[in-house]
Image 1: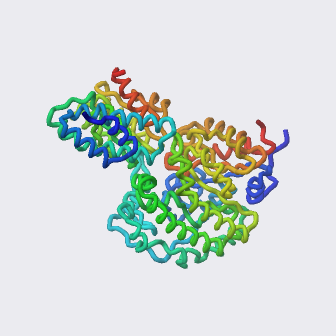
Image 2: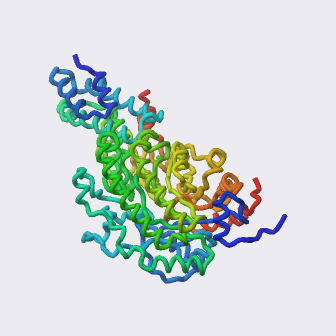
Image 3: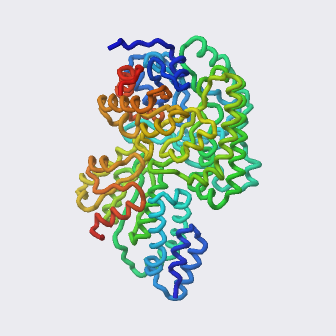
Length: 388
Length: 212
């Protein structure tokens, strides 16, 4: 058997895979929450003082040194924060994001915490109220201060592929603002309000993509179009006709705008969407809308069998994710993680078009040895040609 | 004569205004509250559950129907309470500690009310001790635990252990549900039942109580 060895840089590996060609080995990517990150650093023996800026999803950026030691091929970089910040509540366990959504630090059984949305600011709003609402300012200079320099530094001084997000979601941001129950009922009862709200959100997200891509687009390999969870565990959140009627017009406008701008800066860049749950029903639409990569392929959701997804969509769509975070990573044995990763490589990696990653920001209940087991499985089974 | 079919249809269509109107008219005509539920609301919400289970109805439809159902129940409940109406069983529901997601649990609650259960909803982020207290106080036949996240799911085991410690485990049937929950997990922690959606939850609850 030929000795496995890397013949490409991480960036080459990722770009090759996303061109639907077989690189030397399947690439690896990961995003992570604060507790899991600190656990991983301890496990890897990395003593690194960091001023960790915890995001909305309790996520933290992975330092390049940690990414290198762990063996990641993709590094996730963030846009800067706006200078103008909304007023904050007195309760130290709560904070308000720039959209006006309240987040509460919610303790988890067994330790750790997670940020949960707790007070949708537009729950009682009318269409008229949307005009006066203090929408985020995409052109706040804080967002791009130092951005170009940092992205260039990572691009020139490391071998990572760069994944980033500038503009955020359409559908998700709408229900963050309105409350999920209220927004879902609006979809049937108040379509005019839905159109008005999505239009406002789309304008902001387009602005964010515009400024981010202008500042650093040439260094971006993967632009994450945020998370648009359109599936539940069992099926669609909304019907396909409803998606096409109410949501797709705004999503498509944003995606086409972002992709056009991005390709002008980096013709080889790709756009990626995160959508949890059972989403097979909408994949053909997303491909039509220009999607290059789908994340995360939630394994336990209905209809998300990786072999079938590859067979049906693998010629047009790359996949990012696959490593189950509902059972395997948090509760599985190291051997289960190894076999699971092997299965997903066998399903999704032939012909390229796959980047291994946990299906969500790694939560605090995932033991670091399981993340290492995932990485080791890629090293064991992920060299091409994939042995099925 | 009351138009029970029209009432069921109003629930199916998520029309809370028509549900309220028809319920009030029925009461004015002297139709017993429990008959309005069993002949009008229950068939409506049962059909909604089936439509969801079959993939024809989605969350927006479910939420509107749940609201419509609640509009009817909130008019009828005080009347039923006055008449010491006996539900077929009592179910205590709650989302476990650390978890504040409740849409699924709320839909289950609505479907169970429609099926004739007395439902006591403890809300979200419920510590194990509160579940135990609720079982002691209300003596439900069913205790339903909901979790959306793998990180909060372990709290279900904690509730079962707390019930065991309080000597109450054999007094109640415990059902579990939520996105990360599986039959395997339910068996693993010693729960009595699991269901993948609200319609199935009602069927499972009835089956656990020998009502089918």
